[in-house]
Length: 253
Length: 108
Length: 162
Image 1 (cartoon, chains in turn brown, orange, purple):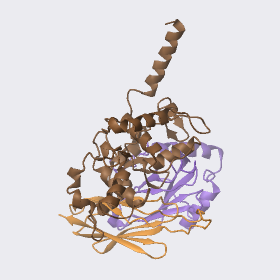
Image 2 (image 1 turned 120 degrees about the horizontal axis):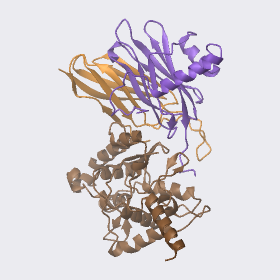
Image 3 (image 1 turned 180 degrees about the vertical axis):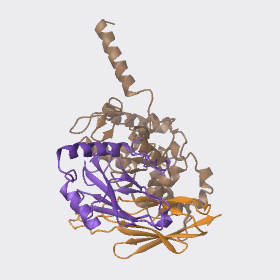
Image 4 (image 1 turned 180 degrees about the horizontal axis):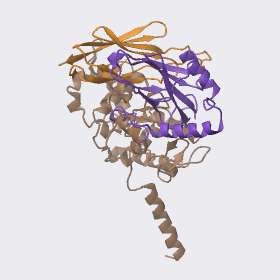
């Protein structure tokens, strides 16, 4: 290798070092100490208001339909860790499904109830409740078998330049981590805090809502809630986040 | 309309004379009004405008809220433990609706 | 710690916050060059005078803790503590918060009594823009105390509306 080549390689290594490519951190690592404390405080983090609603819905029975609790008895035990394994391949359809998708599927197939709808307060509440049961459990999604094509598609999405600003996710979320963007600090872009309470939203929202804001931010196509594009990206982000604890409901700017 | 949830955090027990901190987090959009919605209509103001707290029947705290209070507002205040009794929290919303929650303090 | 306003933290220390010290320093500088009273912008002075029925509040014995740099104006933590024995004879009747440049500058009022034990509250405000925020407390003896702070409101990078 030439001297110039070695210098370039060293510069690349240094860049990788500053970007922390080997050590992916949770979104909360980029918050102020005050917001970190508030996220951890159930008396203070408004996300728990949605968890409370979700817990109530989980135990409720509508008409003759079984309630969530009818199958998932003792959810604190039986569903502990469940959210850490999403998104995952749905055995029945062979397609990738996230936690919100699984909840809607349970409603349609087992409870014979109409869908709650993306970003409905009820679905956010249930997703936040089920996710909260996995708080502290390390993310452990699978990217093998039928999930592999989704993982590959998600990785390609993450690395592809897009939008009028012609930016790829990786340029900021690997290359500029820790730097400022307006009032924010650029994070590794992992979704372990979602559904999260964002001050910007004045409420709880899903990871896909956050991804739509990212897409709009680089003036790229916004995909639909629950679309294969965002599901694949969600899986790629979850693989990046493997080993990090689930912290939903997170508190974000 | 989102459900009304309130999370009231305070000690269940206190010694007589002890000052306890009461923390209250409540779910409300606190619509300040005046914004234009997707259909071009003006959103009316709808906030919780007052929280009143009584303890064993006596008023101990009142929070008057205007449009400068955040959505899903948090408030904390203190009260001196005097006798075993209920703290009754009553929120008043624009339009006259009220919401009530109760928490018991045992004084030893 | 510059903004000890998480409920998880210990109660207030009686020491003045860095902001108070800075405010006191700035007020001192301004007073050196200007006639007394000119350090407060007229708009805020008028808003305060309306609350105090014209009385000039003392700038002592009250701590207003609010971040200098706000992460999002939608929810801003504020903590206010007034030095008071909170007895029948000597207590804080209320604490009023003003955000000078909000569309409606009266933000909130907290009514206290000797039953409060301490004159100490925390709350979450909504600030429209960077501005001066003030807390005015009415004392049982008829006097008033106040503190204010300059707050910079920053913008979020990624919002739903782009």
